[in-house]
Structures are given as structure tokens and as C-alpha cells.
Length: 196
Image (cartoon, rainbow, N blue to C red; front, side):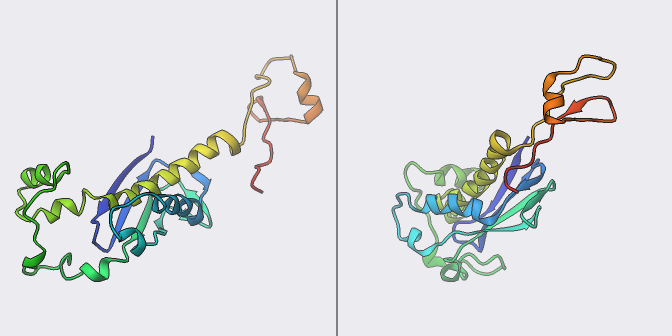
């Protein structure tokens, strides 16, 4: 089972996700995920943010030499607009920038509910997480899951039990294709992987 946690703010340094439950040995590159991020940016957006950001994913852990390790995969999508917001969104303690405080919730958004739930007077703390920008990291996680789906459907090495130990009945494909008999007595076929 795959599970992910995500974090980061719309105008923060970046968006991050930790994906766990991924198998080891899955071929995975930055380009596999960047294709999906590029498709996301070709969609419709209200503001100029789509022109500012050029999303690229970065693997911080879980992938080495283009293959997954079986450990949690950490993905990072950096925000280029951070430079314009670092005084307002700085994680260090300091006084709030009063001209950027948001006190009026947007209709139809999570602003009011989040402000009530977390007791925020500045609604920006909610809208930074509940924004369309946050979908970038979800698309990146989806790109990894899409790669796993491809692996399971098209590229996964297949095995087939054709004889159990103690059985004298051999099927004809064994002689034709030279399938191997495992030490346990089970005959299996391991075809070559298509990406090699």
C-alpha cells in the first residue's frame, strides 16, 4: 500500500512529499515526473503564477541511479516565487507584515473553516496550504504512482508455475523455451526486462 504525506506552503521555499510503500528496483527518473508537472502547467490558471513557476521535481531520498530503493521517497518541488515572499513567509520569528495580513475569507474556499479550526487570525496561514499551487506536489506523487502502474501492467517480469515438486507431468513449453527449475522444484520463466 502506498501512503504519502505532503507539506509546504504556496509561497514558501517549496512543496515536499514523502511517499512510502514503494517497491525496490522500480525504474524512476526526474523526467518521468517532470512530464506530468509540465502537463499540469499547461492547464488553466487564474493568475500569473503559472508563468513564474517552472516545476521540476527533485528526489531527496529513496531513488539512486534511476531506481527506487524500497525506502520512503522524498520529493521536492521548489517555489521560484519564494524570493518575492521570503519576508512575509519566513519561518524565523518576527513581527507580521501587516499590509499582507488576510482577514477576509474567500467564498467557496477552505479559508474560513481552516481559520476557525486552527484559530488563525491571519487567514494567509490557511490559504497558503489550501491553494492550487499545492497540487504540484500531488501531481509529482501521482507521477510516481503512474510509473508503478506502468511497471505492473507492461514491464514487470512475469513468472508462471508450470510444475510442482513431486509432479511428473511437464508441460510442452518447458522443453521449447528452456524454462528453469528452481531448487524448490518449481519451474519458472523469467523473461528479459524490456527496458534493457
